[in-house]
Amino acid sequence: MPKHLLRPQGDFPVAGPIRRFAAIFYDFLLCVALVMVVGLFYQQGLLRLIHGSERLLELSQAGALDNDPMLASLALLSLFAFFAKFWTHNGQTLGMQAWGLRIQNADGSAISLWQALLRFVVAIGSWLFCGLGFLWMLWDKSGRSWHDIYSESRVVQLPKGSHKQ
Image 1 (tube, rainbow, N blue to C red):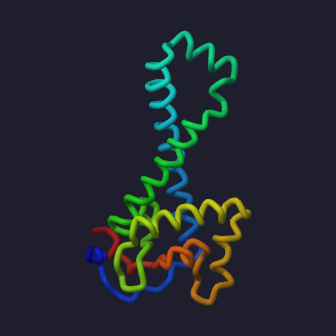
Image 2 (image 1 turned 45 degrees about the vertical axis):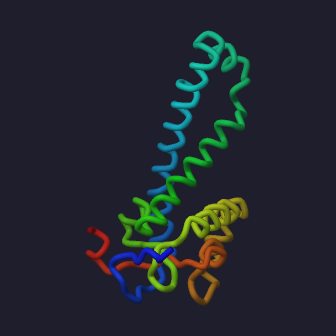
């Protein structure tokens, strides 16, 4: 399968930590909203359909819905789908678009679904280690985080005006 080249093409500098964290914050807000919508549809849609309103209220008051593995799985899958779609399509989440950043391979092509999965899983691990995987870019000579290294991709800063297409 031929690689999907991203536009604009060029040799762009690696993105700095301040822009990356600003984009992460934007995307965090979007992810909170996404998880809220998934939870609403799951609990008020699917569970209400299965159990009915009265039984769902009983389960909720008894705390039976507090640690629902199905809801956690749906939320995680939805978050991965969000990032994978943006990263593999145009290399940018909405937060990255706002800050002029893009994820790409060294040759300027979009990352694959496998690379997106690696980035997603390793980024979760980075947060679980108190953000060390993200802060790694401060010590890495190429400015890479753990998920950049493991997915063999990089986050670049696009020139001004080129990301508003």
